[in-house]
Amino acid sequence: MAIPSIAAVRKTLIARPGKPFEIKDRPTADRELFDDKEEAKTSLKKDAACINDLKDKLYAEGKRALLVVLQGMDTAGKSGTIKSVFADTTPLGMEVKAFKAPSSEEMARDYLWRVHNAVPRRGHVGIFDRSHYEDVLVAKVRGFAPADAIEQRYSQINAFEKHLSENGYTIVKCMLNIGYEEQGIRLKERLVEPHKLWKFNPGDLDDRSLWPQFMQAYETAVTRCSTKHSPWYVIPADSRTRRNAMIARLVRGALEDMDLKWKDPGLDPGSYEI
Image 1 (cartoon, one colour):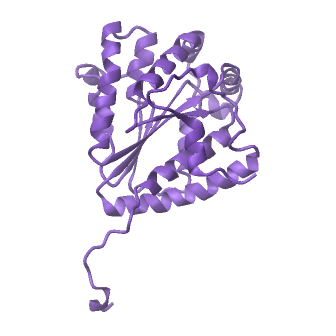
Image 2 (tube, helix red, strand yellow):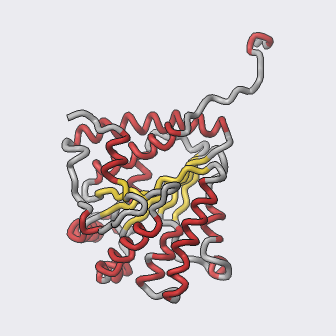
Image 3 (tube, rainbow, N blue to C red):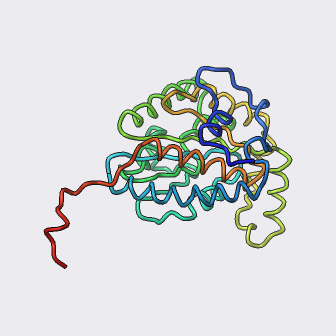
């Protein structure tokens, strides 16, 4: 089976704007796109190299930016995705922001302040490990904000993302859709493998106990905030290898759609003697 085209990956994974979306209809372990793991590894390797080349063109151009949003339950693989998809990417022109619980300084401002502050500069690829969607996910499930405030945030987020898209930003939003059973396996791994123990947070178990509520919150967020200018892609995340390959296809596609060209500095190379 051939490596799936970027168009096929998009068509399979997109949450279509304006269409009904139910998370139960989206598999967490899916081999439709990558039946063979070795094929997924090959695709990832090729895309990672292309992403680096395209990122250099984006940096040289200096006029536009790419924002990759990774959102998912604990252990879904946000950091693992970053490590794999951008394995060949040089640090120049890269920005990664991991959103934790807001600080007192951030709490003193509107909830989007810290997010807008972390948006990548033009010419850069920015990656959000968690994002502004925490404010309609954790904040909703945990009751950190009133229901009427949460309701307002969906349209505010859409307006924020539209503002970015109209100002030279391409946004790729990926929900890492991990299954309940697979999350349990990965949480147990963190308790028994020394190099993963540091990742374990007892609070993750509290979120796990609220799994149905979180799934409903994700369903609402994807339904309300998958737009033409910034659609959601729902990524089956039970297989790390396939997850990474799918997201690499999406990132490469977003950069290729920019039709990036090397910047012309207006110099005549022949007039210089070295």
